[in-house]
Length: 113
Image (tube, rainbow, N blue to C red; front, side, top):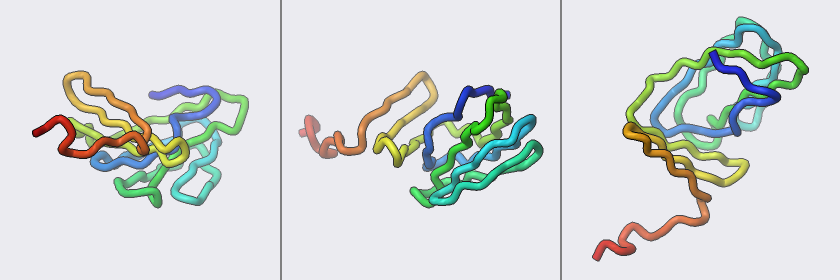
């Protein structure tokens, strides 16, 4: 079970890990791509991998605690892009957690030869 107040994680899309979210005890809004829809307790939201068109977020727009269950494939590595804040996150087994701004990338060959 995951609890967030007043909103969930930032809007993001994922490269390897599709997710399913099942709302358990709240009414909220689900953002998916450019659409926002009202969701109710018992709704299931599918969040496939992809690009900005699959960016997703659940927003608690009430004064109640937001509670939902999130199910995923739990891949050993994941890359998420955060289109609103223009960040990229890499996560992996062994504690890898790296967040950077998309504009701060480096060339593949820097410091390699």
